[in-house]
Image 1 (cartoon, rainbow, N blue to C red):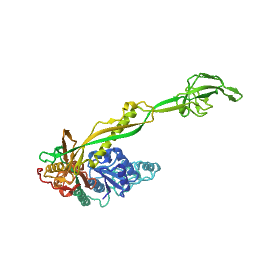
Image 2 (cartoon, one colour; image 1 turned 90 degrees about the vertical axis):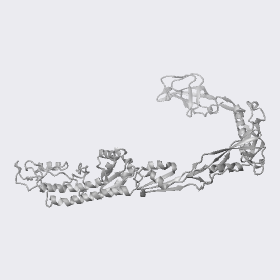
Image 3 (tube, rainbow, N blue to C red; image 1 turned 90 degrees about the horizontal axis):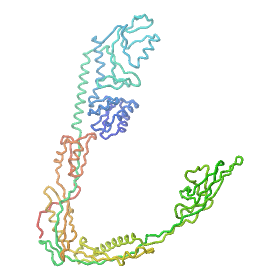
Image 4 (cartoon, helix red, strand yellow; image 1 turned 180 degrees about the vertical axis):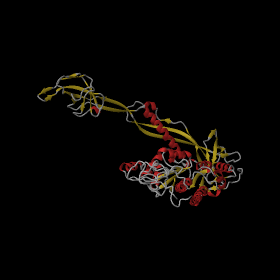
Amino acid sequence: MAGGIIYLDIDDEITSAAARVRSSDARRVALVLPYGSRVATSRINFRLLSRDALINEKQLAVVAGDPATRALAASAGLPVFASVAEYESSFVRLEVEPEEAAAASAAGATDVEPASTVKPAETPASKPATRAAKATGVARRDANAAPAGPVDAAGLRGETVPTAVPRPRPIATDRSPEAPPWDAEGRAGPASPTGPPTSAPLSGPGRRGGSRLPLVVALAVLALIVLVGGVGAYVLLPSATIVVTQRPEALPPLELTVTADPAATEPDAASLVVPAVQVPLDVAVTDTFQATGKRVEETKATGQVRFSNLDFLRTNTVAGGSIVSTNAGVRFRTNATVTVPRADLVGLTVFPGRISVGVTAVDPGVAANVEPNTIVIVPKGEDPQALKVVNPDATTGGKHDEFPKVAQADVDAALRKLSSALDAAFQSRLADPSIAAPGATVFRETAVLGDSTPNVDPATLVGQEIAAFELTLSATGTVITVDPSPISSIAEQKLRATVAADRQLVAGSIKVSVGAATVSGQVVSFPATATGQQIAVLDPNALKRLVLGKSLADARASLASYGDVTVTAWPDWVGSIPTIDSRVSVSIQGSVPVETPAPSSSPS
């Protein structure tokens, strides 16, 4: 292989692609991008890949079947190819062109001009060397030039120039380790950082058109083999494995109505009647509750602050009601307006003017009882450099007293808690097996709890200044006890008859529930509901026919209704299910046990 070929997956990121290019042992590397590749979402990605390849001395090309991907890569300056075969044939073309040039030279097709008018072909890297040679008078000779004459037309001494110079086209070959990138026609691109493009001679011994034909044929055969091999690998090698884990589906609910009659002594399946017993239950709960209501008494703290004026030019008047505070944000309001004397300047010493004034806390409570020397923030608008404030003594008198009181919210919360406790006590009584006769079941759905009654009027508790109060709630309820065996048996038989021929019943999935009773006098009616699960009988070959040739996403969507689908493709860059039946494997996995549907029968 002429260069390293790296196949990217559709989900590979730019960092993964760059790392794989850097780790390749080949000098020339081709990235093969599938349709929808994340790398092809931005031209910046290709620019980053190009720069990273240049830094790591790699010659990078992009192979993509998507024209949009190739356009993005080409706009970033990367060589692009539509297939791996086209990429590999570019190396064949680069070897063939020197042979064609030699044949053309031997046949006299090379364009030759007189030495007085023709200059050797120059590359950008060779121009400075040419100018230097002319300035110093040093003789230069092209590698393919004819022997030089003694003196040129200008009479320059000591210089020799070729009498005839061919015009070769720079051809990039892989014989030079520094060969530059190539375009779609095999032409050399801009000069590499290490030197100009390598030029092959157009004439020389052994370069005849007759010797070129076998080489061209051999290379064409090689390209055809690569192309056919690539197509064969794409068609034959990809495979897919599909695993469908079936999900149970619910049977349509079967609803029956069975009457539990306290007057009946035996169950009657034909009339859907079973015996019933209505049991009365008395429950009561008592609890003690704390009063959360409060009567609050608060007072504000008071004290004194001292203002100090450091300005020796003027006095400072602080209005009454000005706010001073501590660093913690406890605020105090001055009780009167005061004028702070100006400071005295004695020599270089400043003696500040001082005055004290009473303050009262803005907010009541004990938080305003602050320590001495903590009120240090001057009123807003004052210059803190010229005016200082401090409390020489602690502020005192701030109080917060609370007295418990029963609030309406306390009574409401107590009634809610007692109601929940009453329900719990009723449910506890229902769980007591002694309330039902032997062999009977308590159908708690039929349980009804009557209205509750408090032992005292809750309104008389509101406003009492007490820390706690006691309250009792009581009620009477009833419940129906029935032997559920006939109901469950009838519902189960009816449900089994609803399973379709192409379905299987999930073992142990049948559930029978009895709804809340409807009481009419001494007769109680019970709605019963039977539910179950079934699972489809699937044919792997039929499922396979649904997904052949589809994309992986479409294949998953097509089989999603049959269960949980896992689709694995090989190789991992393959984006669709193969169209060849033998390359696709479909297996069915059952997640639950099944049983054979029972024949339909009428209850006796």
